[in-house]
Amino acid sequence: MLRETLVFLSRNKTARKVVTHARFARSASRRFVAGETVDEGIAAAHKLNEQGLAVSIDYLGESVQSREDARAAADVMIRVLDRIVAEKLDANISIKLTQMGQDIDTTFLRENVARLLDRARAADIFVRFDMESSDYVQKTLDFFRALWTDGYHNIGIVLQSYMLRSEADATMASELGARVRLCKGAYVEPATVAYQDKPDVDRNYIALTKLLVEHGTYPGIATHDPKMIDATCQFAKEHDIAKDRFEFQMLYGVRRDLQQALVKNGYHVRVYVPFGEAWYPYLMRRMAERPANMFFIVNNVIRESPLGRLSGHHNGRGA
Ligand SMILES: Cc1cc2nc3c(=O)[nH]c(=O)nc-3n(C[C@H](O)[C@H](O)[C@H](O)COP(=O)(O)OP(=O)(O)OC[C@H]3O[C@@H](n4cnc5c(N)ncnc54)[C@H](O)[C@@H]3O)c2cc1C
Image 1 (cartoon, rainbow, N blue to C red):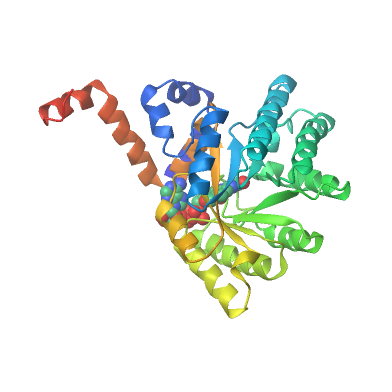
Image 2: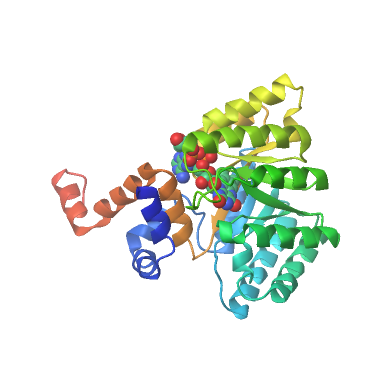
């Protein structure tokens, strides 16, 4: 219920306005978001690279309704690509198609994304299309396949293990030789299209992992769940699949201990690094995944509110 409410609030304009303008929320968001500017995103990428972690940089934004905003978002990502090259980062990028104009018009979307993909291809940088809610799955895969057919092979997709259809999509991607990021899925979906119970989502995650690790092209196993990670390592070991045939992926600020432990054990790990001013829906989805994250934010609210400052004073912690 809490998860559904938080995902609902992630799309609510009034809640977005209130939270985005609250000073406490902005500072709390820094736990999961690298910052608001390109410089901050790039700085976070450098720090992670120094720790042996690859990154995928994401400029936050979704459901963009104007061509001007969609073009501006692509321009920001082109600046990011230029910085990746100039600063020799171990980085690729992730984009959301609704940020690039998917809700506006397919021809426009294609022009806007191709601009970005041409630049990425020239620099040999991979571009991942994030997967959004179920309304966009078919459109996203159709768009991806059209680009692939036209020779853009520096692109990959995301599949969600809560979706009933994902096994067929994983098979399609494996046959194409396209890279897949596998995640559980961050939205709230009806039973007509998605598994509703966590054990089913987890069971499907492991089945799809096995399929992709064995037959796919360098899949990204995107999860913080130790059970999923152990099952992946175990399966690869049993089938003599080398550690460099796949990578683990985790979100910025989540399970940093696990990220480091996997690197120490010789696995490739990539951290998804979001930056930008439009952090509200992203932050709400992270809280929906783990209520403890909400308590972390609420804690910050109390600490920064007049009440918190007062109790801090009484506790002798200073003004
Ligand atoms: C690199 C990456 C890219 C992603 N891209 C997409 C995408 O394109 N589309 C999409 O729908 N979803 C995406 N997701 C989100 C994903 O679908 C899940 O919602 C999210 O990863 C939580 O699922 P989980 O596999 O970590 O396992 P869960 O079963 O949710 O959690 C397992 C354990 O992981 C830890 N954990 C999980 N989430 C958090 C968190 N937010 N904070 C702290 N600890 C946590 C907790 O210890 C928890 O007990 C992405 C996730 C990652 C890691």
